[in-house]
Image (tube, rainbow, N blue to C red; front, side, top):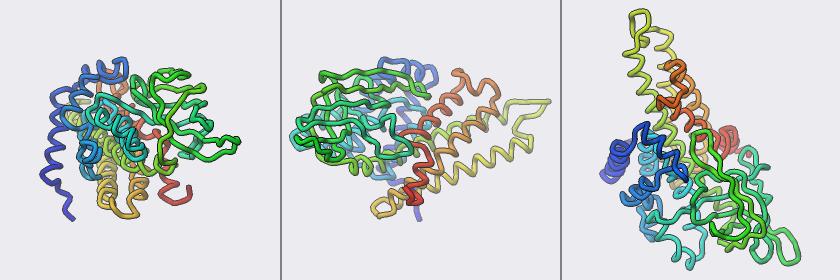
Amino acid sequence: MNFDLNEDEEMLKALAERFVEDHYDLDRRRAYLAGANGFSPEMWALLAELGLVAAPLSFESGGLALDATAIATVFEALGKGLVVEPLIENVMVAARLFERVAPEALKGEWMEALAMGSRRLVLAHAEQGSRGGSLWVAATADADGVLTGTKSCVPAGAGVDGYIVTARESSAAGDEMGVALFLVAADAPGITRTAWRTVDGALAISLELNATPAVRLGGSAADVADNETLASLARSAEALGIMQLLFDATLDYLRTRQQFGTPLGSFQAIQHRMAAQYAAIEQARALLNLAIVSQGSDRFANAVDGLRAFIAPASVELGHEMIQFHGGMGVTDELFIGHGHKRLLMLSRWPNDPQAALDRFAKVA
């Protein structure tokens, strides 16, 4: 099977790589993370200008309707640059979900701005009672669409223009009707936001809704799950890019750093450990390719779950090993080894842990 990229995919890869090369180094990444929203508005605007914000959206919304190959190519390249702009949470998850379930009138109001990057949405779904990928929604919506409840973790939720909130509906008689999706404006009354930093330094919020008015969207919890498949592929591709970045940098370090008058890379024990991590990267890439070629079949979601079940723990182990080879400096902010490892930790645990993906892959969840 031919896994070579076509001309359009090569152009997307080159575009993402050029963005990283021109606008990212460790100092600038730290500065971007320290911003009010946990990323750089200027870099977000540039990604929109380059077309990478709109690209995952449909042609009707001004995007390129990227398939699995193109999405994996772009996010692996951005992963190698440790890019902090929240393309996955704001575009792959929220904008694509909104495009999928919103009524036409709302799409006419929002989609052009979302594609241009001038407005951002985020999915507010996770709650404290949710464990292992289970569908736990305690937030409620009354018959008038007024929401009450708490969303415990909303990554990339600072400074957005609106939230797509999952809540359990009740009829006028008070009967529970299942989970529905609602659009909540960021300036709606009854909202309390608490910002905090995740393990990778990005900004997340917890969202409290107290009699907050909302607009009911179409769709259901099944749409959230289906929409997550391509987002999960993007997360895994980003993790693979980070793994390759850390491995390559550590390999160069082991070839030059000397101990007892000889390069560290000459020691057999270190060679064995690096060979094991090289094998893990190749396994992850093979599983990514399997997921890509499964798109369009009923095996796609299962292949993505299998990819995530492998790459989430494997990437964290690789990060541990690369830190060990760098010694104490490996965990500091002075080297991007620690930055990459923290991002891998976040990717391995959000939106659920690898055991949940393994359970779905084995069809026991």
